[in-house]
Image (tube, rainbow, N blue to C red):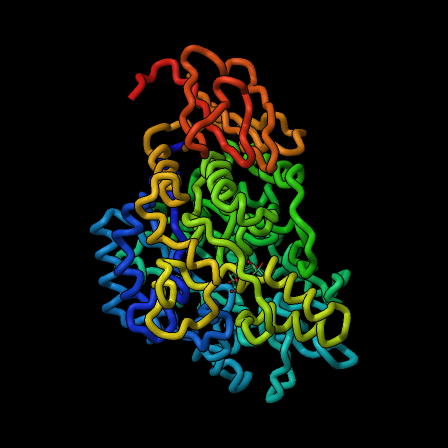
Length: 565
Ligand code: TEU
């Protein structure tokens, strides 16, 4: 069995602070708002919080452009507020994991300001500079993720600096030992405050390869260098050093956002001896409806491909590493909407998707609002868009006439990053209970019927279902440590698998269709000691007739030695 670790046995909850809860009425969420909801979170049953960045930032990328690693942005509160959040979370048994963005800083960070002031500055080498291409222009054809080239010109020196995301997010040069030392010291200061770990933003991209040559362009017109960068073996060298010096060895959670990472690399990154990271988010299943190369379509994720990718990661990581499991985050649309499930099936499909995810092997992450069955936003005007990726894409493709305005808004509502960043829906009242002021981004109009207040005391609510699901994880080791074995992998409408740990076995069957489906269990799952551990419906016909209702998920348990509670 894998070694027991607290973060394997936990359910995490991601807070996007800007949209979580606004205590001071300025329309933007804040730390005091998070504190006010800690009881709600503790009652949900989660174990740990991942808090998206709350550091000072010009906000070009909603805090993923940090201008001071050691402070708290005034819009969120003060360091004293943060310390209170930490101690109140700990008092409720909740661990706190901070978002750490060390692939790049903000262009407003004092390091970058010094670096761009002249070639002689000490911090110049903290960033990545290249001379123009021989004929002039950027050094290669690499594209930035938020549009345009990955290089911007520093007119003073005539050199270009690298930015994989936006020009306001210059990439740090991890080859520079003085920079690494500063970063590790900063991490240790946060650990000294008592945080429990870091979620490390695009950590797979910190080690830039020596090969800075151009590559084959994507439909955007640029080469996407992320695969090449993530494959650089130097990444593992840096992470081992970071583990020793920044994290002071094991014990502190290092959760990596590993975009463009292969299975082989993820096995190294999360190898069980803990020398690098503990677990990673991989994105292969998120890329199935367009990927990062061209997401502005209405293509949907085909279930057979979704299963294929997730099973590859389930079986491929078995005994070799650890997966972080997620359907949603602040960069991804809501999975219910992404799969095209309408209002009629919203609650049923929310419960089914939750079951499917939480029963896989790995650590499940709930993104704020998942537990209510929140959906994508339907944007009707470009003025409503806040995210630079969507705004830039809108300007480019509507601007050059390649995509019609209404179509682009539709694609952005389906796939853009703003669509899951609408404020948390706490109640049907003014401001959805999120704010007493004017919310920083539009509320999803469905807050009047999709909200926490309505679900708190309703026994068949999505929220109540999440509580049951989370409780199960604590009771059955097989949910945490059982190996995942795909079942009926070719079935077009059902996502099914078993989990096996010694004598214990689970069968998980999830109906991804709006039809009732007869679906026979594998041998050994209709024994005297088989019981229905969970169904997402109040009454299930599965044990009697092997029939799954539309979007029903069931979990069966074979536990010969276990007594019925
Ligand atoms: O995201 C990195 C990343 O590569 C993707 O998640 C990407 O933002 C998305 O697929 C674009 O469609 C991280 C953060 O989670 C994101 O919010 C930041 O904008 C980005 O890094 C830069 O810091």
